[in-house]
Length: 303
Image 1 (cartoon, one colour):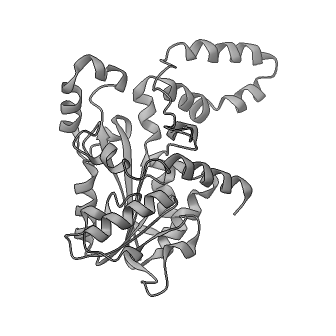
Image 2: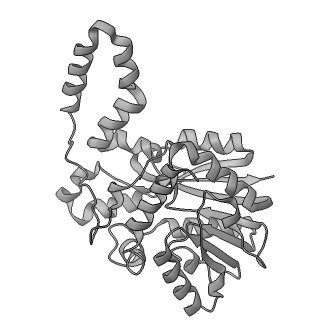
Image 3: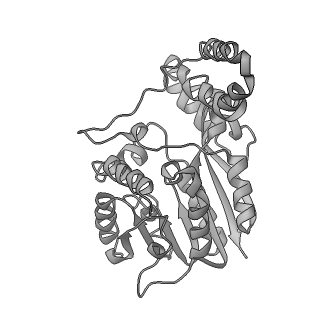
């Protein structure tokens, strides 16, 4: 692994090192900012696939594994951060599972997807909350490793933050997406020649249309880097679905969750109504999810 990749993973480990015991409560507990609507969607996908063995690549504190323990499945998982692995082992032990079926590993290393005595391949592989922390040039490595981790007919389920959602938010993310992905300002300025000052001025003027102070930067708790202080990318669902197909997956689907009834900056104006109206929208195949859902899932089958 290159020094740059090592640095990214080290920073991610530091970010999550203080989160082991509270992550599940913060994002899946009854006081979570948004209900974890994707849990039932994930269970439905796995159960309907007929899978008997599941590997969770980037399992965190057994965030999803704990919700699969009543489905008569062989469950395995690994995570990059030692503190997350420790909490996952504790949770799975309390639920009657072998704690050795959770270990520390990286999604970038194919050999970390298996351990001696455990399956060489699984019926299903899930990967949630991981792709945001993967350098763009390594996306295909992760997808290839997931592909190789399942048996023929096996299901792979990957989650990512939705880059197209930024077109709905009208904040800093909107400006950055339009500048970098649509206009591609560096290329345009290089081509502009004598018009470079005018193009630069146009971009400055355009930026004023957006709330550049939103969303707030998430920082660490006790000196470690926060979520927005480490690599935390979004992905374009159209591009990721195409990468799945190019990798050789069949029956590729794009599903959406965590809808927003209005741009997030207006959540405070409507109180509890905003959350209720957003939850009411939850429909994984609604085309509006391309723009109004902050997260999406790509599924594919290895033939």
